[in-house]
Length: 152
Image 1 (cartoon, rainbow, N blue to C red):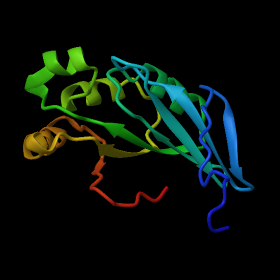
Image 2: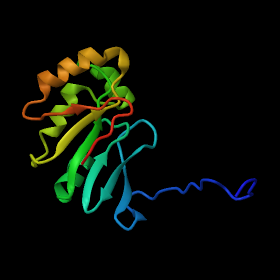
Image 3: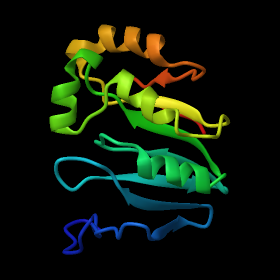
């Protein structure tokens, strides 16, 4: 309605660990991530298949726990902000490097999860891509580009 006094968008604060129904085939749930300020990731589920998306984070303990306990999580989007020689900055700012990312992922027992990587600092893109190749082990990650759509 033109010139309506009603809000176009209503925001609600999501409770960590609570599933919110989006429609009859999808839901979203927030979980806490390890960052310098309050931060969370999300588990988005559609037709009983889920993708886990981290925001800023340094450790993946809760991510590993969630993926291990929920077999419907088939994909993960995980940040990797800095080159591995910047581990001190990564630790202080609570972001991942390729070396830290793949060390953390060794804790995951499942091998049926697709890995997408995002949140790469553009200045370090080439170096980080090279390091992802170096440290990835058996993983076959895809690096997400702006406006790219990940299918899960």
